[in-house]
Length: 171
Image (tube, rainbow, N blue to C red; front, side, top):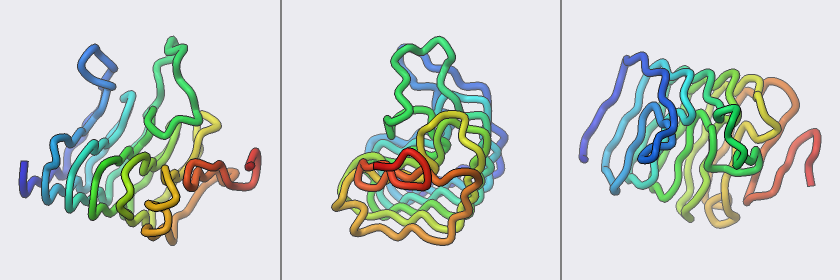
């Protein structure tokens, strides 16, 4: 896909299946110029996911109730790939701006790949698991990224280059 805008939708209720992790919105296959703007996302197993894109913008979305299934015995809150409001990996030139994530297992996960990203001016509210509000998977991506002006509610739980940082339970 190229030059796609997904805007102004109310999207909720996605469950994991054999061919899906329960994503409300998903981008695959190296799509280009993707804009996910001003959507309401809720009550799903994953929020907004990109597993490969270039020129990818997630902005102005309100995301809540992104939680793993209570019967999922494999869920690990340390994983950057599970039950996140926004999950981005193997994506270049990405921007996560002005989103609100509330009452979810995890906030924004930039889980894999070495390109930098920008995570700016987001509001991330209470987590339902001891996971992270913001995570960047490795040191190369972290060094090339900008993370600033984000408002975090509760004790700060960040995973930077895979290491938990914050006020409680940090290494």
